[in-house]
Image (cartoon, rainbow, N blue to C red):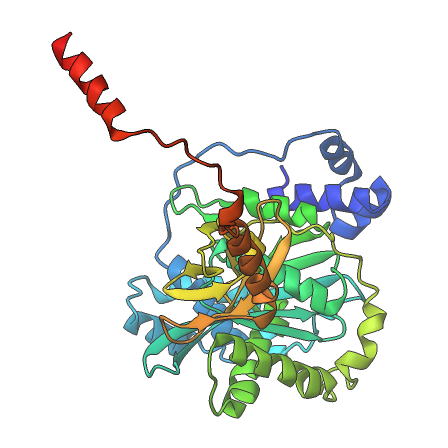
Length: 414
């Protein structure tokens, strides 16, 4: 039985016009298997089974990483993992290392070079920084690398949650001008949920809908092939070592992202890449990216706010102006988690975008939002206070006071 990942890849390749024979050769899967799964409308499901983790399992990723670095001495690796809690025998370790030893000894230099437009890689980096208010805060760096041209996209965010991940993807697609056929991911929880009980990995269903929305195939990184995701992992180190030392200060998260964009456009994507010996920006057109869906996935919920009489709305202890015609109405706020917010009216039409201040209790106003407000108030006041003309007032008939005295007398005696 094929994996869920292979099922979606078969469907994706078929949608691109490939024949069963071509899909079979591309994936190394029997033609009958491809044909059978193309007839199915649902991905494969698996029965739950009891999974018992071996003593060496928690250390396999580390062992392969050390072998990839050139260390093939089982005794050295045994001492290292034993210090971290490994309680198995040396023979188990040697048996596991055996299939990988020959490649490690030969220091195989076969690189995972990617054809144009075929694949991008995505990962998160974490940075603990001192914010403008002096407090330490963890920021996340979303990094996408195009496999063929080595073009980078980087964006710093407040968190790495699902909605933030989706927004970063769409802004990366817009930056590159399109989408690759597939995107490679580490086993991040927002993309792949791992079950320790069954040992099975399961795709996040919302993420699969997002991938379908933008017509790309999500692919998981294989833990036992460390170099398959090497481009983006080297990218995280490159950002940490080349971009971050250039950041002398920043006023807020949006300012940090402005500096990152400048670095991308003037340093990172315009340098002579040491591996491909080309300038990434100059060969971006070779990627021949497929167009992204112009409709946003809209994974971020809008936060409703009422516009106050002074044309301001409140969000996270700060205030932002909108055009005066929205006074008394409700608007929606979308927090992009990258230091900016967007404001929409009740129909979903974009009104305004703002940078989020680094401090609380700040007000951000735009002069254009108040233009015409004074004239409107003047007209309203003029209508509410009409000019009084005494000469046109109706005359009141006057009676002698004796008439009222007689009426009171009649009421009392009756």
